[in-house]
Amino acid sequence: MFLGEYRHTLDQKGRVNLPTKFRKDLSQGVVITRGVDRCLFVYPRATWERLSANLARLPLTAQASRAFARLLLAGAMDARLDGQGRVMLPAYLRAYARLRTQVVIAGVYDRLEIWDATAWDTYTRRTEQRSEAIAETIGSITAT
Image (cartoon, rainbow, N blue to C red; front, top):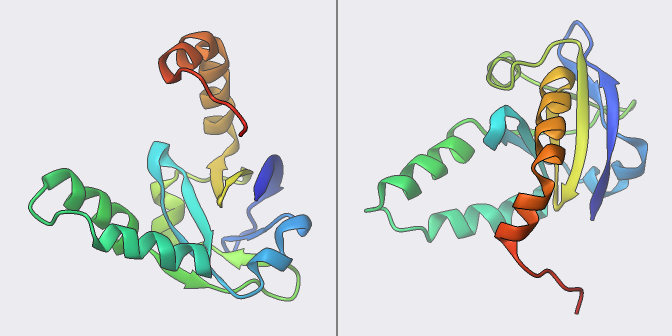
C-alpha cells in the first residue's frame, strides 16, 4: 500500500526520484499514465495488469467507458526506475499534468500520483475546506 506525501524536484531531463520506501514495490517496472484531476498515475506493473483487464470489461457501447479507457490506456507508458530510483516522464505526460520543477508524489493506496506542487497545494486546500461535506456524501467507512 502506498501512503504519504513526498516533495521532489523534476530534473531538466524530465526525471523524478520516486520515494525510497516504494522502490522495492516498483522494482518490476511501472506504468505511468494520465490520471484524473490533471495528475499522473503510477502503477506497479502487476496492479496495472489487473486494472487494464478491468478496463477491457467496460462496455464498449458506453461513451464514458470509451473515454475513460482512452484516458488511461492511450497515454500509458512502461518505465523502469534507474539505479538512482528515478523515472523518466515523457514530455506529453509532463504537459498533461502541467508539471513544473517542484512536484508532489502522493501515495494513494494502490498507486502513486504525481502532481505539480502548486496544483497539489491548491487541490488539498480546497479538499480540506470541504472535508465535512465530502465525508457526509460518502457516508460510513469502517475498517472491518
